[in-house]
Length: 208
Image 1 (spheres, one colour):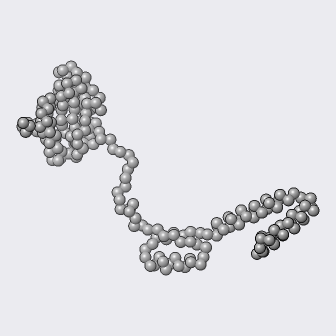
Image 2 (cartoon, rainbow, N blue to C red):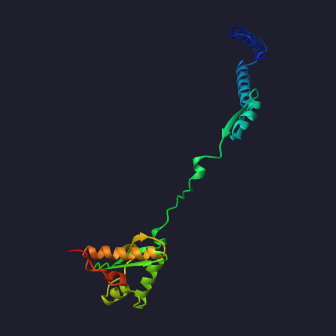
Image 3 (cartoon, rainbow, N blue to C red):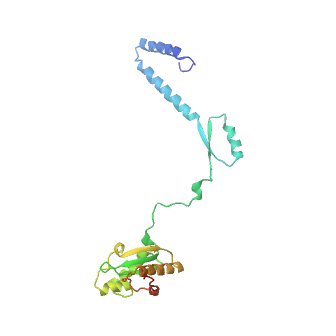
């Protein structure tokens, strides 16, 4: 029935004849439906397997010449390119770098009297904070900020509460200039509680 190319009317007549034969032999006609579904599934899988895809990197007319050879076959051609925007852009990372792992200009602020210490470091801010804290912990008096906290009998405080990252930069002349600039900004804004931390903060204030 499925082998010959016949119209729907004749196919239905053929189907009725087959059902009648099955009934005469005392079989359930539902078996015919299962056979039909199996046949349709098989044909569908065969049609899928007939079509194959081939990918070619497009380099010009040579590629078109080669792919024309597959025109009358069951192989479909897809083009790709190695010259796309993604290969020209720098790779992005989803992991955001912690600012305390960078170097640059930072500010320490006393939690009690709000006096500020502005300085720079060519190493990670985290390491510089630990040095400041150790000066406070062991009373080394090497840090102006730690000395202030010790003399006033105050608590040092956690890094996130005490240290503020002002500007991220690498060690060098640019970093020296940035430190001087931010000390100048503090003095220009007439902040009188800026601690003496380096020769740069001797710049006179231009505030009226």
